[in-house]
Length: 117
Picture 1 (tube, one colour):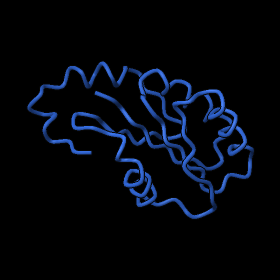
Picture 2: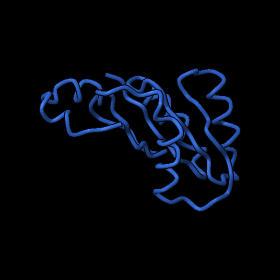
Picture 3: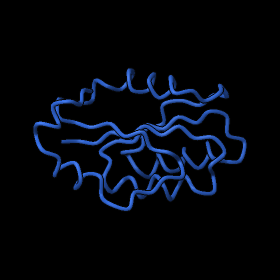
Picture 4: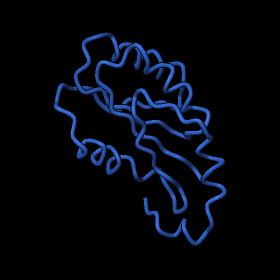
């Protein structure tokens, strides 16, 4: 089982580095899109992607965020997933208290049949 995270950011330079580094502990790959940051977030993301191969920058433009943007990223990267893998929509300022990988390992197999990649 792998966990793939999608993170769309805008103006999160003060926190995005900590968030992504924390998510590296349980995400197998993090796909990041910056939609119009002007506070240095894009530069921070570029530095992080150079240091951490599991962080992949998938785009940068100034379009307004919509849920469809996450869907576009998912559709473009879904080929990396296999049956049994999970996808996480990661907010740029979100930290998980419990380890998502450990939590998902404890989900009964029957329930896992409802997720699709």
